View 1 (tube, rainbow, N blue to C red):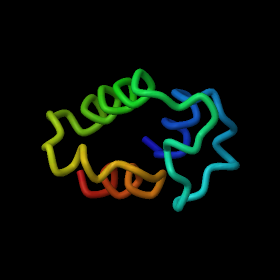
View 2 (cartoon, one colour):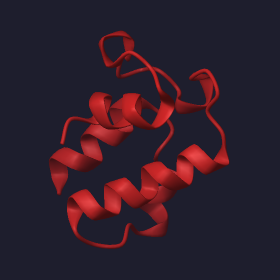
View 3 (cartoon, rainbow, N blue to C red):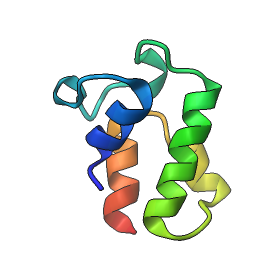
Amino acid sequence: MEAERLIAEIASADHGKLAPAMLLQDLQGWDSVKMVRLVISLEEAVQRELTEDELESLSTVGDVARLLKKS
């Protein structure tokens, strides 16, 4: 799954406007509930529970993309 598309679905944003360096917290309307939805979606995509280090590293769109690529 493409990181930009996943984040856009959760944040109700245009995935074409999401850049790797964008902070998730800077997305309009981003909050803790959306972060939880992202984590659940990521865990489903990689078919495992994310580690604490992986969770702490998720701050940008690029971080999400890297996590999806390495899994």
